[in-house]
Length: 455
Image: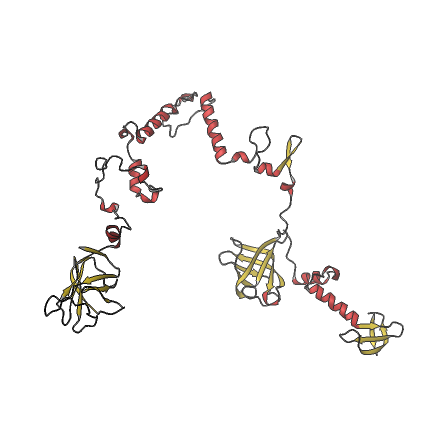
C-alpha cells in the first residue's frame, strides 16, 4: 500500500478507464466535466469512514489530468487530506465503467519523510519507553561510540531533573567495577577523605577532636600549623587571589613593583623606591563632563506650570530638594528659564518648582538640573537676568548667537547716524549707508544724561 503524508496536497491515480460497451477499449479522452461525472473521496480512520464529494476542475483544486493509457490523476488538497488512516477515490461517468484509485496509507509527515522520502528519521520519545526497557544487556557492544554522539548531545536541556538526581543519588558502595569512571571517583574521594585529617597540626587542641561533630562546642585556639598544612592553606589562598585577580590591585609580591595592568600600577608611579599617586590618579574629570549637572532629561507630561512629570530622575524621594532647574522652550530655540526644584517624587517622576517658568512648558521640552552648593540657594530669575545683561559685549561674538546679533545691530545703528560736533548737524542715512534720509540741527545737550535734543 502506497503512503501519503497527512495535511499535504497530494495526487491520486484512477484507472485505467474502460468503455462500458465492450469492456476493453481504453477511454483516453474523458474530461473533468464529462456527462454523468461523479467522484467521491473516502477517508477511513479509527473513528470510521467519511465520504467527501469532489468537484473536478482543470487547473484548479481537484484538478483532473489524463496521464496516459486511460490512467487519470486527481489532485487532493491539504484541507481534504486531513485524516490519518486510509484514503481512496471512486467515481463514474457516462460511457465508462466505474473506476477506483488505489488505497493510500496516510501517515504523519515525519513518518512519511523517514519511510518514503528518506529526508527525516523516526522519532522515539522518552515517554514511549517503559521503565527498565533499556538495559546494558539490551545494548549491543560498541553501539554507542564517540563518533555516533553529536556535539552537545548530552547538554542539560536533554535530561529530566530526575534523571540527573538518579546519577548523583547513586550509592558509592555500588560503584565497584574496576576501570569505570564511577570506581575512579570513589577511589579519589576515599583517598581525599583518608588524608584529610593527617596534616601535621594538632586536631585535638585543648582536648577537642576537630574531626568530630563539635556543634555548639567552644573550640580552643590552634596555635600552629605544621609544614604540610601551612603549605595547603597558602596554596588555597594563592589560588583564590589568582582566581579573583586580587593580586592585580596592589603588589604581586612583597617589595616588588605593581603588576603591569593592575589598578595600583595605573594610579601610581615610582618615586625613589616609593609609589606615589600619578597625574592619572589626581586629574580632574574628563573634559566635556559637566560635574555640576545632576540630570538631563525631558518633560513627559504637564500637571500645571509648577508641577511636571519628567522622563527620568533620581530613584528616591527628595523633599526640600533646592536645586537649580532649567527649562528650555523647544518652540523658541531652547530659550531657558531658571527656577528652583523644591520637591521630587521618585515613583511618579514628579517634580515641583518654586514658580512658573517664563514661558508655557509643554511635554518634550528639555530640562536640566544643576547642583546647588550646600547651604546655598538657586539663583532667581532676576539674578540670572542681571548676570546676562552685565556681560561684556566683546565676550559674545559667536556666529549665530544672540550676542553677535545685538553687537551687529549696535554697529549698524552707529554706521547709519552721524553727528557733526562743530555744526551740530545730525544726519540719518538710509539702509544703503550713503543716502541721507534727513538732517536735523542739535538745539540742546542735556548735561545730566548726555542726551541730545534735535530741532
